[in-house]
Structure formats: structure tokens, C-alpha cells
Length: 102
Image 1 (spheres, rainbow, N blue to C red):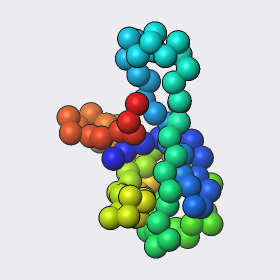
Image 2: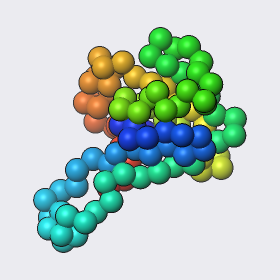
Image 3: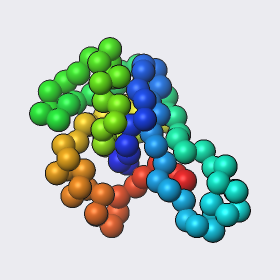
Image 4: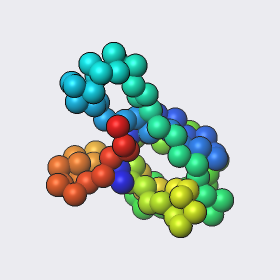
């Protein structure tokens, strides 16, 4: 799954949701939740744009960036990869890319 980070402070990361369809916006009168939060695993692995490991104390620095995330078996995020702008552009155009549910 790929997403745009709204905020990230251990133990939660909040991603912005893609804009829903016009029909859904009309049905919800524009009151849909614009973000979705996920719990982070205790053993989370975070890599920056240059593929170096980051400690989770540096999570607030990834706010406003595109990330790839992988869920663990416990339904918590176990891995985060911060993407460069070129990687994010290429990745979001793939037909099988998953975004946070809208």
C-alpha cells in the first residue's frame, strides 16, 4: 500500500485518503474522513529515501512525504519505506497500487 503521510508519531501513523468519487462526496455531503490512522508495530522498520534505517523517534520528519507501507500479521504496520518523488510518481501509476481505503 502507498500513501501520503499527514502525521506520524509513534505508535500511530496517519495517512491522507484519496479524494472519493463525486457520488460519494454528494452522499456524505462532503463530511467523509480525509485521513485514516494505522497503529505501528513495536518492531517497525523504517527506511528513508536513501534506504537507510531510521529510528521511530524521527517519524515526524516523514510528514508530507509519500511512503510505501507493509502490514504485519497483527494488522499493524511493520515496515515503512519513504519514497523519492520519482519513485512515488512511478508507483502510483501502476494498475495494482493500493491506497488507503476511501
